[in-house]
Each structure stands twice: as structure tokens, then as C-alpha cells.
Length: 81
Image 1 (cartoon, rainbow, N blue to C red):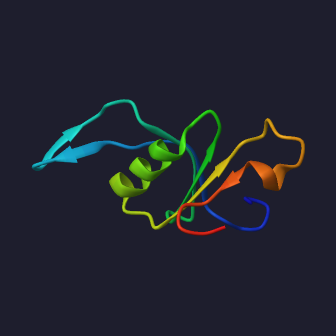
Image 2: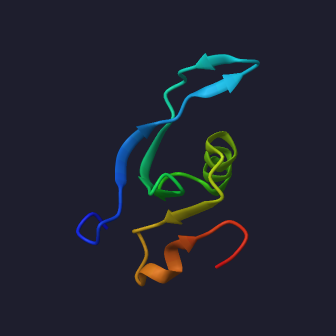
Image 3: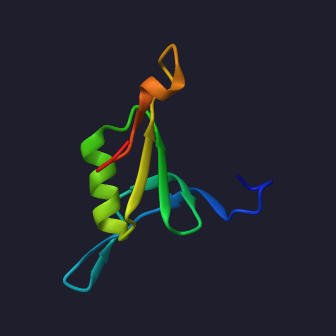
């Protein structure tokens, strides 16, 4: 992705903000692409990716399970394919 000119941040900290109080609770995004797309590699679960999307304000997330025979069988994208 970087070779194609995309901005990619690895292990991006994701704080939780509640009533203007910032809590660093140890959440880290595997990849944040162009400050808009969250990419998580298993063993993160679908519910955790949905939480990351809500906390970050990002609208697009991709969960990839590399422990499958054919990679497309391991993809999960909330709200679509």
C-alpha cells in the first residue's frame, strides 16, 4: 500500500474519549489507511472491529483472517462484502 502512495499507519493507538476525558485503554489498530480505513488481522472479532469503527469515526473496516485456505473466505467487511 505504501508503494502505491497510500498513507499507512501501523499499530495506531486508539484512545477512548468519554465526556471530554481521554482514556488510553490500550486499543491499537493494526493498520489505518489514509486515516479512513481500518484493517485488522485476526484474531480480532467482528464486534471488536465494529467498536474500533465507532470509536475512531471511520466508516470502513476490513477484518482479515489469514488462517483460511483461500483468503477471500477470511474477509469480513461490516455492512457489505
